[in-house]
Image 1 (spheres, rainbow, N blue to C red):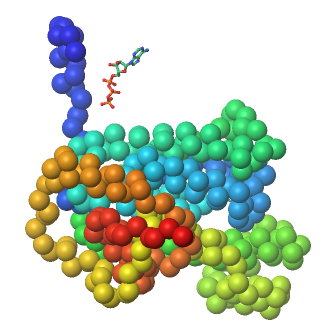
Image 2 (cartoon, protein in one colour):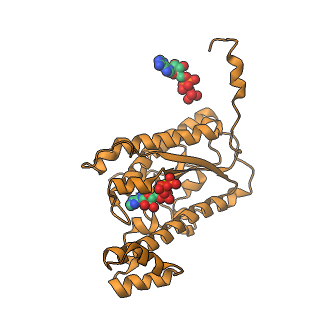
Image 3 (cartoon, rainbow, N blue to C red):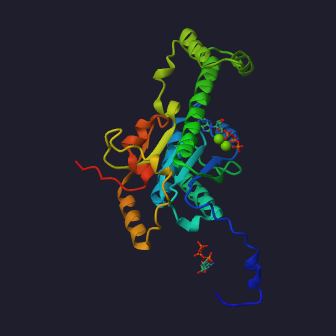
Length: 289
Ligand code: ATP
Ligand code: ATP
Ligand code: MG
Ligand code: MG
């Protein structure tokens, strides 16, 4: 870049490097999706096309950014997770968040017509997303973050499923249904669904109950054999990898397929069978049939 007397303005830029050796979670959330979902007539409480579209956009983000180790999505939000060793953009907050938000939004809009062929996007109802980065200092806390989102998914979905069943099948008004559900616990909602409508909540689709988890697929391991690497928390930070090592790992990650799963991520089993997610060391690619 040419030197000029104006260049001093560069000094006004503030550093925003995220703390080293911490998990980075970038969570994005649809702006005004309540209105947007009304406008495009999303099915209540769960529009399958809208969820599939969110997942498809998130898969593309995972493919474009091999540094991501896992992502988790519910409703109009997605959490993207970078490993503590990640050095992408020198861990600059602004760069990481804006890259994820804009890459996701670009794919969401690009793929929209596949999932909603009869509902072309129209201003002012254009999808956009906000985003933020939060750092977590240990694997335990990262896992608690993921558990928090999945519990939220469960609580919201049980509420929404009961509410919309009372309205759609029970003919109740929104206000009456809301009133009746005030102060109820999970067991009450399960009972309303079962006794009044013959619906067993357990039989609802997994994608609605558990949300969507995206990760790179390698050969699954026996639980426990891998010791779901929470123990590496207390160890010293790993030595910085050289450029060529990083590139090699990146290539390996790109080869793995990104899968969309609807599965419990609160218990240890998920992490123990997929040790590469927390260790960030690519596993063995599954043998192709
Ligand atoms: P904000 O801009 O503050 O995020 P918002 O209107 O997007 O406001 P959220 O709390 O993010 O509010 O909630 C998203 C809303 O979008 C849900 O409450 C629901 O009404 C709607 N929505 C999102 N995804 C779906 C879906 N797959 N099916 C049906 N409705 C959905
Ligand atoms: P970073 O990701 O760090 O921002 P960058 O490659 O985007 O890196 P910038 O400093 O943002 O670097 O510079 C943008 C570059 O894009 C310019 O140096 C120029 O080469 C190119 N560029 C941007 N706009 C135009 C344009 N209208 N015509 C031709 N080239 C352009
Ligand atoms: Mg929203
Ligand atoms: Mg939301």
